Structures are given as structure tokens and as C-alpha cells.
Amino acid sequence: MYCEPAGGDQKHFNLHVHQHDSNLGSLITLELSSKDEKIMSAWLDSLRGKLLAQRRKTTDAPPSKGCMGLLMEWAEWLQFPVKFWVQRTIPDMDDPKLQHLYPVSFVMSMTWLAIFAWSVVKACDGIHLDFGVSDEVLGFTVAAAGTSFPNVFSGMCVAKQGKTSMAVANALGANVQNVFLALAVPWTIQSFFLVGGPFPMEVSNILPAVVECLITLLPVVLIYICCSSSLPRWAGGVFLVTYVIYVIIALGQQTTNCSIWPLPCGP
Image (spheres, rainbow, N blue to C red):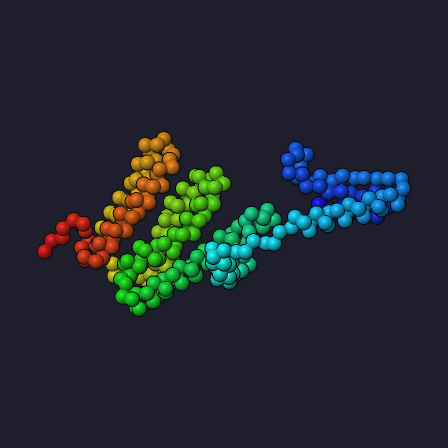
């Protein structure tokens, strides 16, 4: 790789070698010495010249980026503002020196989650006003996907690290947090500080939605029980098919205005 004098001593120099197929390590340092400074200087100049000539011969031009690489550069450019502020405001829990700041990391994560959730809701409102798509359809498609994709990526990351229990707990815990924290905090603020008591909610046909949530949760529980408290590889396909069926039924209910579709509705 390169060679250099050893600590300013003209009778010694170090030769650093990158060895690919050795048990000694990827980087090996050889220390060479001679009693004659002229001989050592000649060896040093010769080796440097050979290394430079070899580097010029083997160095290739960097490969040109394809369409996917260029698209990823655009994606990274668009993601930069979000990544910049998130990295500056949320302490990195992988750094042992910052792990004592875990309450700050949790609070700031919830703060950014609230900001992103508000942005998704405003985007859904714009789609509803401009294209006439109902709020219910946007709720279980655009809004649900926008809030669930971070859980997907975090689950993939911890699953690749072998922490499968954390991936499953993340998927289930996110829904628990949505119900008991993301729904409870605004409800509490509205009822205690703004209205000063109970307030009516414009919710219709909520019972079929609750039943559908219970039915879609059944495959997770049944597979977990029947497979000795584990989730096999094919379980992912079952969950994807279940989600597709749920989306089809929900879209059918909205387009036909029938809360029990595909069952026939009464006159």
C-alpha cells in the first residue's frame, strides 16, 4: 500500500501491505532496517516508485452511475432537511456516551413523530379536497401506510440483527402506542383543557371496523400459538394476503356504502 520512514530514522522504514488471504490480518506492517543510510534511502525511493507505477496501472476510472443511483441521489437530497434536523435534535443511542440522554431521545422522537403525523394528515386533507377521495379511504391507505413505514424499516433493521422478538414487539407495540398514547393525549387535551368535559365524536359504523381489526389480528395469534411461540417464514406471506383482503373489503365498504360488504346490505 505505502511505505514511510520509521519515526524520522533514516536507517529504518515501514512497509504497509494489504493482505487479502492471510490469517495475520488485512493490514500487515513490515519494518526494514539497514546500517547504511544510502542503501535504505535507495530502497525507500525504489519501493515508492514501484508502488506509484503499480497504482497508476491498476487504478480504474470510477464506474458511471445508473438510473437507480441517480434516483437515489435525488432521494437523499430530498431527505437531507429531515435527516439533518433529526440527527441534530435526537441523541444517538448507539453512542455509549449519550445513552444517559434516553429520556431526551424518547421525547424528541415523539415530537418529530407528531410533526410528521400532522404533515401526513394535512396532505390527506389536500388530497380529499382536490380529488374527492373520502377521508376513510385515505385513513386506512395513505395515512396508515405513512405512519407504518417507519415501523417496517425499524423492524427490518432489528430482524437483520437477529432481534426478532424486538421486531414483533415493535409491530404490536406501535399499535398499542397509537391507541393509548397518540389517541389519548389529544383526547385528554380536548376534554380537560379546551372543552372542559365530554365532547361528541362524528364516528359512524365503528363496530364493523373494530370487528375487522380483531379478525385481522387472529392470524397472528393463531400462527404464534400453533407454531410453538414462533413465527415461521411463510407467516409473512399470510400477513400480506390478510392485509390485501382487508384493503379490498374496506374499499368495497366505502364504494358501496355498505358497512358489512361483501355481505348483502338490507334495503
